[in-house]
Length: 267
Figure (cartoon, rainbow, N blue to C red):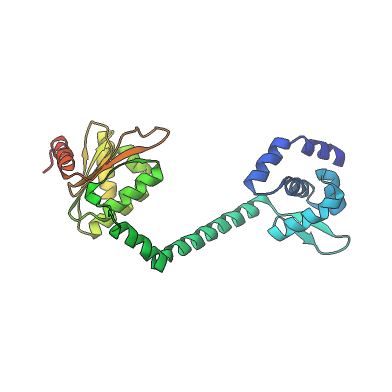
């Protein structure tokens, strides 16, 4: 029976490869952990037979798995091992990733207080040919880059923010839009939003977010800040990669805002 199980495990190279990648294990660690999970409780010799891992390496691998929390040593003699259930491992890994991310964020947040960062800012603002924001227009690629630029210009808004997107986009990113709406509300920034899609759905969303949404029939996605800056998407929602253009042009932004006024009948 054990040899049948061994043969079955040895044939599952695809499973071993995926488990190895999912849980950041090497091949021997993966085989030994799978053997423990299938057997329940096993000695090093039994693990070697079931996993196909050389007996001379099995002890080191079991010790490694124990240190990483994938295996537990059963009290008593002869020494036997238990495999820790996958759900427990997964939760532990998720917590570790979250902790590492929190530590990294904390570390990054302290950089701005260093002398080196102050010098970087000094180079940017006071170099031989300093960059003037009003001279900039840029093409942006990727959700992260676009979101970062959008967050920056919205946070710098003084009077008004105009948003044009779809009802589906608003629903899919409701948490992000809620944060944005609250930020603008707290800063006393005038907010005007137009949504394409089903008209009844737009009305329901307006009630849900407690913001007046205008319904439009044209599909478009853009953001106008103080009628001076505009960021508009040039790709469809289902495109492989998001591409947007940011213009710091009062003339162009005013023209776009005027079209928005006519489309919504707003003033």
